[in-house]
Image 1 (cartoon, rainbow, N blue to C red):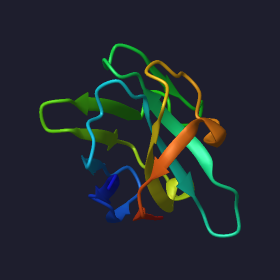
Image 2: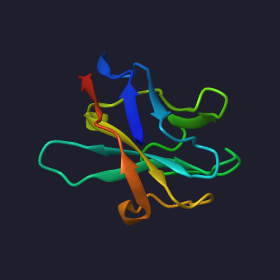
Image 3: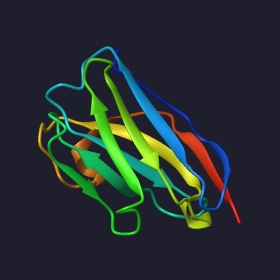
Image 4: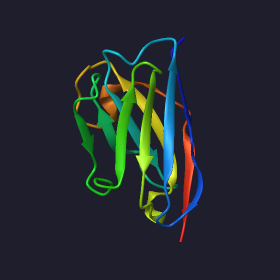
Length: 125
């Protein structure tokens, strides 16, 4: 059974940092692109960042570029999202998801097949 488990969320003050983890079981990330998404209350889910299967290519939405970093550790079968300089508007439930495509530089949700349960990130002002 394919499972994705996110962790690392929490409450942080503006300008603080968090590192989210997404651990996979039941399959390996090798051969798949992985994305991070978020959904704030009353808003649609939006893509935050994605990384290709080799980790050699990444994509970020404009509002997080330069503040967030996505990385992949194939040995640990884990994807990370390092979030620095957090802002209140980053508050959301963050999800990781896996695509069937090995190199995918888009966070359009239609291309992602397996999703985790999410982890809450709250940034206080």
